[in-house]
Length: 376
Image 1 (cartoon, rainbow, N blue to C red):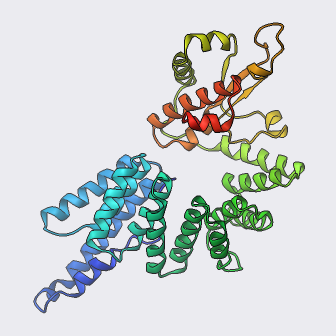
Image 2 (cartoon, rainbow, N blue to C red):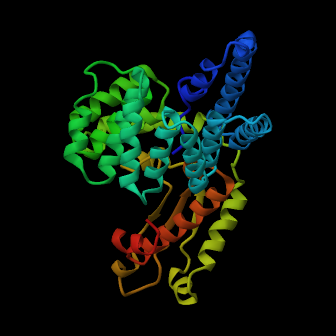
Image 3 (cartoon, rainbow, N blue to C red):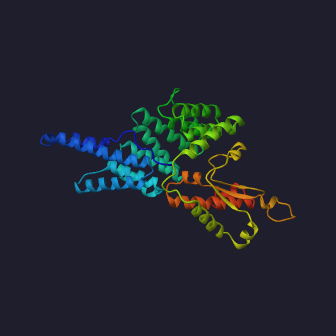
């Protein structure tokens, strides 16, 4: 989950309070202080723009420079620490992100952004949901404008769903305004939550509103396709998922895009991890690297954002006569793998996991067994 940037890049309330507490002599330089705050806000905005552009390394450099300058001046920099946390989270280092957010909150406990992002990172890690819920509640208490309240409400509902507290999540979602929300992202998050809760009518409504606000959002169209698929409306599912395919393929490849040859090499390395007997049983099942599922696969019901799939008859279901079916394949969908990754290392990890996951399907392992092996 990529950290969402704050709606404003103003300095934190704690920093504002420090400015307001200057004595009579210092007030002579109030204009200079305001100019410094404007410059800080501009640099923070540049950093958050880098996060939005999937350039976490550039965001980190900006934040590190701000922290160094603050240290040299003997000042605190909760805003820069928050940006550092977001950069770490975007690079897949949740532990470091949590440390930065906690440092920002130690300076300014009433700072909304690190409170929200800390809860989000804990949810993403899924290893301390109670603490994630605690920080989501604190963020909701600190929220001031409509966007902040909605972000905190939706995040708290996401934590509750992850905890299995469906009734509480449903009650919280019932407090959402019964009108169009400010951003398509709000509707998409609400739609995903309602779909998880199997409230498909509300999920449909939110995804439709998301599409209305952002017609070119592949995420919104994908949500409509998921709901249509879950409710057996094949024609609507096909139309929505064809649109997802069109939009995803038109999107620019990320900076961590790998060549097809490199992905094939990574797939081969993953297969080499299998025991020799397993490789022998796998036989001539080829690994196909495609950009994306085909239109025919999507029309046949395949989720267009699937990372990979085993297409064929599982080993235990094959006839005792003959060898591996010649039509069996393992497909890797490279654009989808790169879309869910945040770095080149994560692409490599996803290729490995996806190959082993789909190979396990060839051997007839179910989802529970795959989860036990860490391949879910």
